[in-house]
Length: 190
Image (cartoon, rainbow, N blue to C red; front, side):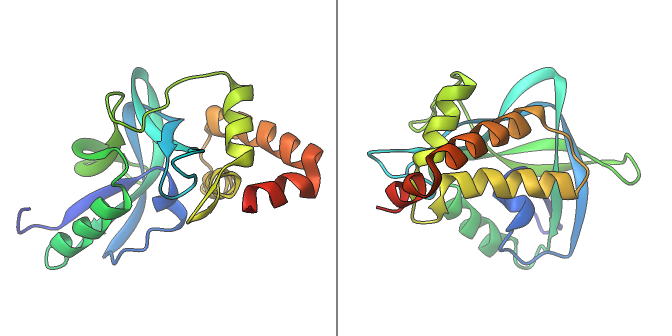
């Protein structure tokens, strides 16, 4: 790690729950990538026997992903990224990619955690209905998988970001949770 401050880009739970010390936080965009619920979560939002689904980034030349960039102090960067490496241990790797900041369109390089398709927990693309069903019933040590989705959708809306994949999945999961009512939540907690 260099002796300079380092930008970190969050596009999932890092948006609403960074749990890191940072100097500055700015809305930013990663061009050429799409956020998708294609990564399995065996350690946070699911279990090995019933993995949940969390977001990763998929290369898509015409796409973009809005998120939050955090400036990490050089003095605490090693400790911060060691903690993040543990948090993102289930198939994510650090990549340095160009970030475009919303307020001034300036571009800086930042570290981004990406779960590539060849990682052990990658679930990949499937139908919206299948993803929604999996998310609606999965639970892990960090809580309900549906809460992760709902928190992400809420955070994106609060920031004024559009993400059709997240919002369509949110609608589908809410319908399942509402249709199953309390029974689905009780089953997910067992």
